[in-house]
Length: 429
Image 1 (cartoon, rainbow, N blue to C red):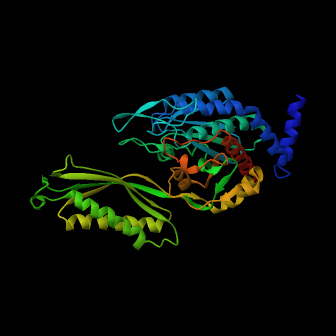
Image 2 (cartoon, rainbow, N blue to C red):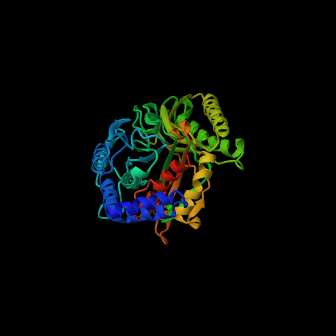
């Protein structure tokens, strides 16, 4: 009982002296739980599952939340899990989000808890691993939920924990991810005032936090280009219509949109053709082929210009070569946009709990994140935490590669940041 009284005194004091005593209390709770958190992260890593198929993952999240004392809701946006701290309590509502899905990649990292999981992707059985750190994100949010539950009586508001499936994109023909969660009302009942999310980065040292205001990650638009020509013998191209030559012209011409039509001193943009499929042998010009790729932009005006020019280039080159062309758009995420006012209010929190020298201003990334769908609805702040120990070459542990690896010690930065952002936002609101 005496220990609980001391804890309450420290917590009350923290709201009047810039969080210093409270921060030390949180650090103590992190240390007490870190071994369990690491074990959880390893379990999620070993049991990686693909988007919209995170059944074992969701079940473990649910059970861990129940063990803490929550009453989680399951099946949100197919396999998502949501829990609320202090449900019904007056005051601000903070949302915290973690993504939970893995990728169709075979792990090469030599660790005892490497993934041996498989799944079905595009109709084929494939290996599955957490090649982007979502296993760590999930463990961090569970640890945050546990620490905040310990302190719930001193928190003048509610916290909504959102474990989101399918950040990497729902399977073809399915809805999923943050967009579906928003559609199903995850930011309502109670209405969330602000939301925070993080991503571990292998390109930053453990202990670092990287963040910026406004656009931090790009909008992405997936595309498919189908070209139909006329099949003929490779020795007589004049008898057919060659979609391969047309595709080659298109790929080269698409690159000039970025270099010649966009003001790149303002923001970056990227067009990538990542796959081209057509033909079966060396002496046959095929009837058709298709290309897959992505368009990434960091400003809405540039996105509009790029998409317009993209369609003009594809359709006009097809017409010039007598080829039929069809453009289909797939997954589309908006810009991940940190609201400037929220950023300015919460940056001191990140600096306080992680030390100012460890908080880095980040240049905008051309990767994309569906956390942006939450930010379209309410103010949101997204940031990166370092995942590599000093001395590790980040080029050897790239995201979405078989060699991706981030160190367990990164989780402490994530936990203290999420806890502090939550409590400081609620106390300042």
